[in-house]
Image (cartoon, protein in one colour):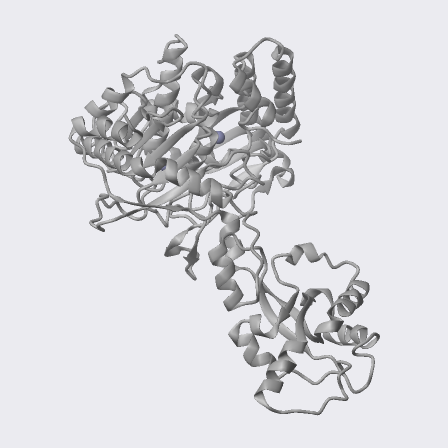
Length: 190
Length: 421
Ligand SMILES: [Zn+2]
Ligand SMILES: [Zn+2]
């Protein structure tokens, strides 16, 4: 199953999805304000947002605290696991390989994302974890909703990071960050 | 205290006995591909003294030919070095003008050997570069094939498409395909010397850590909170190994803390690897004098839940200023799922050992499984992701090994083969 580009959608359908992507972008902006890689997401069930999340990797020192994990942790505090099978994800950047696998294991109904993630993308950007052979059913994925806005937020983050760069950081961290680009998580090449 | 003793002293007081066995480096995605791909090549029989002239003819006829693309294949080969199946098809050599025509024609066995000595088998190019007829035409232009009586014999061989990744593989291919040159490098995975060095560095301790991983998985499974899966994170940057985190799988733990009904895959985020990574992060926050429970959430299950988990979590044994899981090793009872494999990569671990492969769900192995006609999959060797070593696509890589128990007692508790570890 190929990742579908949302440019092909009719106006009404696109408007429906754009509404939720706006909320995902708001979460990404919030992440940016907390010095996190600006990636945000919302989970939608029956036309209602049931969970929100933004990246928390920097504050937690945990490279796996992506927006999708944060949102699902919130949702499952109040809902049974099965609810995710009737829920769609809207996320500003294509889910990484890790998140794509997690979403498919939970059985999330569909994924809508903004820009592609050419470094770690798990739903077409690098690997196809949503559709590759697996014990789980494939997961439909649609990409390209407010792509430019998502990229712009990531650019802002790089600028913000570079401005802070002169202040002394732990040597190891700094070396790694320059070697591997400003951010390892959810960073498209474009 | 030597390192294995340190490992023993970490687990023996806990009543855990080390497993005995061997490490097997996992094959990378490219290594698997390299071992499988072949193509056809043209081979021309040439008089030994004309080998260089024919090489020039080919170079002129095929200006786009990049011989470096098949640098692993010997270009000019003597009959005696051909693999047996090619010796059979290529023999006997044709009589070509060699400048020794005045000698008596001879048909003895010695003479045949001499004939064979005087010819070379020249690997022209992969067949995709030129059609048979055009190759014939090109060869006919120059000596030794420019006289009517001496038409070239154009032969075929199947060869490995990519360079070998070990001396053993090169030797095997030289018998199965075509004489191979091995340059003691591995363009498709970690350099052999790197693997050897790292294997030597950890092998005396692996049995200890895998036993500890199993024990911790067993504890939490015993509480009904998860599957029989566990992992151990070790810092082996100094001479004495330090256990940083020990966790079990926690997928059946409800938001309120008790066991929950086993539906679907349970709480995916509570896999042992995810919990271990979270506990390393919490230790880092603690070392940095920040609240370790910052942004914590029940569903992550990243607080210690059993005696074993608490025992190792309580130790403040991480150096300050570390970054994610850089320089740390992770030992897991089973091959981690795709999510956890990528979590290990995101966290920049150094080395990973798995106690058992999971062909239907594992993310590390690069071996490919067999697809069923109905689109499903049946047990094979793996899903083919090979997430630990894909440097051209993912920006981190680490060494990974499978473990084979010596006494074959299946010391590892078996879990369903459709389970995500
Ligand atoms: Zn992710
Ligand atoms: Zn997992």
